[in-house]
Length: 125
Image 1: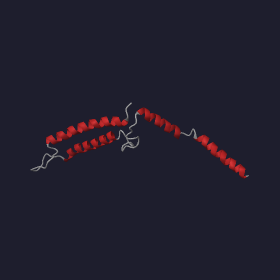
Image 2: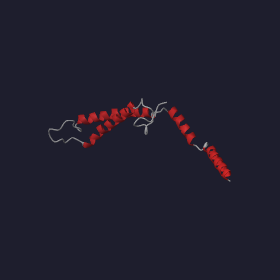
Image 3: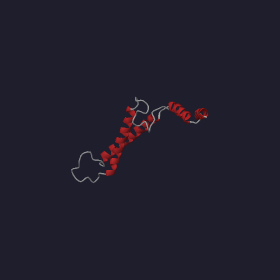
């Protein structure tokens, strides 16, 4: 099974490729000027700057996920939002957390505490 981080990386590769193509087309059409204009830039469009901005954000996210692969779980920057565990490990961890959080073993602890409390009360009398 694949981890959610690997799935996000594949999606980011598609986003990076498509937005790099759109950025290249915007540059070739003159909507984005890399160097300054000699004259008044009539064809320049400020909305076209969205393409390289999304491209840069996607590249940064991809690199953050890529370089956090060898780190321990929950030590990566994006681990709070995107899990790097595969699904089997995640299921076993979540089942263990669910069992720990359930009140099944809480009853025995409560009864022990009540027993100790009653014993101390009886000893005082």
